[in-house]
Image (cartoon, rainbow, N blue to C red; front, side):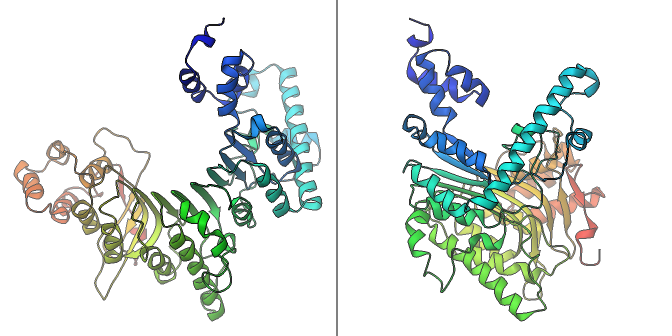
Length: 466
């Protein structure tokens, strides 16, 4: 009897859980004991792209019940490779292996690598063309979904947008050393994927790089077509949506375009309303529309803030324009459950002639929430007198971002006096008298030309007068 056969099954599963795909493939060949554990982890996540080869590979898995039964997650990669290389020589001129210099490799090995990668490229692009010309995507997704287990837990849509010929960590790049075209936003693939698997027991939906048409299945009068997906949405526990280029398709001088935009925002609202059992909600609108008016983004925050999720424990909001009072009230309405909060690229908008304040927003978060974790990233501005950018890559020991996150999660800040060179009695005064954050930060900015340290940058370009 082999040594692994004597290990408990639970230990084997834990070992397999820490292995990569290539390692799992090798483990399956070692002995029968590891075969079961490695198989479950290897086929737990199924990756597909709009390609005949990809769908055929997926069908090969699902048609074998001993493999298909393990599939719990389906990931649909939006990206299509750019069909831009007419011959091997054109391909070779741009190709280079990841993580290695051409000069350090054997020339014959290098030539062989280029040729293998080029053959993969030809196969992939040919498969893409065949899929677009011969197969109907919606039907293919339904056919695949029919073979997936009913206890499928998760679906994701993902755009492979890494730089070509460099890192091979994405699904397409692992085959050809290339990334997908960065301007592919899915062509409604999230909509088609969701429709295909809506009868499964989904708990998690992650849909990034979307555009408004990806929610087109919520059409007609509000609540009409959504009825057939209501059961699926109400089971969801995790929802992540990234609606990018949110304003690019609309000309706001045109009343018809304004109506279409508001209709699209309403469709998002219906989706959020029906997903009433969420414990995790992540919404990202890519970036603040600095060349647009805040009024064009405000309807999105109005729509989000209308709803409350009684079980919500984790919230992420990025690229949101909002009134300070509306955002604070929304957060406070989840104070009984919310444990983790991430805010990024927040623009607080004037309300009733009074400027909103990023500083009092931070104070309100501390006073109204009992967070376990908090993260702040990107731009924070009210366009009047507050404009900062948070460097998420800054990791100095006394990074002020870390201190502010600690402040909002009520952890001890005993080193603040040393870090900011403020008198101990002033620091203590701030903590003891209702935590007067605005006063405290005002004193800091009087001392430093930047906001606080190298992790926060003063960004005057975010102000109305630039």
